[in-house]
Amino acid sequence: MNINNTKGISAKQIQQYEQNESLKKGKTSQEEIPSSIPQEKVELSDTAKEMQQIKNAVDEIPDIRESKVESLKSQIESGTYNVKGEEVAKKIIGEAMLDIFA
Image 1 (cartoon, rainbow, N blue to C red):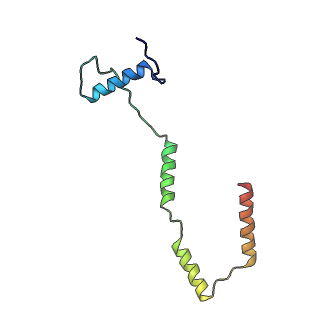
Image 2: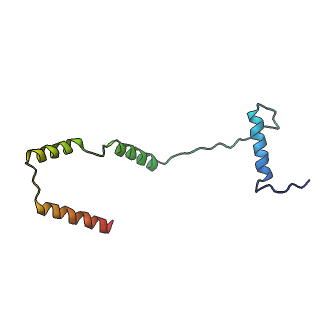
């Protein structure tokens, strides 16, 4: 018998599907159970585990440093917050250089 239009499905894939289906239905005869059912296993390298730990630690750091914000806010409100223009210029140039070389 010739079967057409299988859409790239091989006979081996069909056989594996049938075996899996028979296992799901509780059929346990030796000829229906494959000798070795392939199992998937994932192992992470030590580097990957370390990177995951670092990512978790970074995720725990707050985006906004509340104590710094409160300190600056109180300085601004009391009129004691002063910044030298030279310091601002250095920061601007430093950030621009980082953008250029990044």
